[in-house]
Image (tube, rainbow, N blue to C red; front, side, top):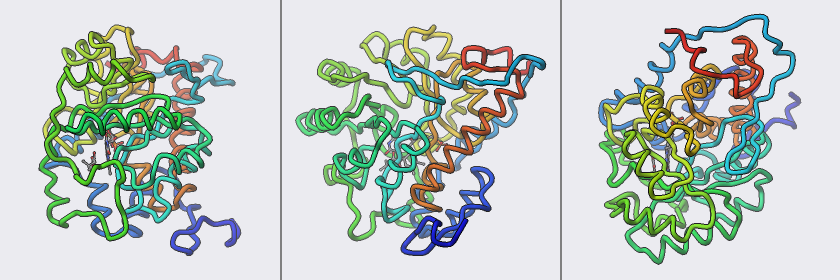
Length: 354
Ligand SMILES: Cc1cc2nc3c(=O)[nH]c(=O)nc-3n(C[C@H](O)[C@H](O)[C@H](O)COP(=O)(O)O)c2cc1C
Ligand SMILES: CC(C)CC(=O)C(=O)O
């Protein structure tokens, strides 16, 4: 690429041509981020067992491909809540993008839109929703951390709806923060000049969120509500009973409760209980196209990626985000073709080697 076409970070051109896979982005990002920001993004809770298990569980699942099916054209599209996505990968909500790149969430929104992906904006965005909306040409969803101030929460939901967010993901796995030892060691805090307008002046402290508050939220939400952070089949059932439109099987990338299982291990039980009544999304450790394929084979309708987006953003701003999604999308297409699957519907359990 010519020097004048390279993405800029802090006015400096950044060459992403050496980036071949998502792990390359992490290495590059580590070199560009402050230690505090890198530790914030890269770390998990306590001894980080769950962080490792998310990856190990995906790595050790083996594939069982078929040959000689016609894979000359692939249809990777899925429909979620009436909206057709060209491929089943969304940008997970992650907080504080301005500590990763000076353009923060604006770069993420531009990058995700260019890659035709839905961007789930975090409650702890460091850029106001209206500004993000202006640069996003693909749909936005909004992730909500419910605060004890009901008026504040309701206003925030209504703001997200009024700027056009198409769904709400209520994070239910963070009643308190986790034992984030690595963040504690670097004394993580937002740098001067960076703030989170919807954090209501606090980071995570105690959140009095119960099924009762969820029912209250669903009662006035005008867009589909998904519960993010479901790991127990009974909770998936309750989510359906109170009228949730979808769930996200997530262990918060191992950042909250260490030693919970990998999400790909949990997924089949939830899929069985939900029995196609509502869509199931999954996140946690998705780094390869084959990971996306495995999650869909085990019953997810779509997946989200968190850390890779942060590393793409830190490495190359909007271009880094786009490239992250494009690599994953291309690898997913290869994985489909190489396993003899030309549509999402044909990706079933028989793809997983037993
Ligand atoms: C740096 C970082 C910040 C995050 N911030 C939020 C957040 O604000 N709200 C939320 O619901 N989840 C948050 N998450 C969790 C992600 O939405 C997602 O569940 C997780 O990152 C997916 O796993 P992966 O990072 O292995 O892809 C965060 C994750 C990371 C890595
Ligand atoms: C402020 C944080 C609790 C945001 C978050 O969800 C995370 O860092 O995982």
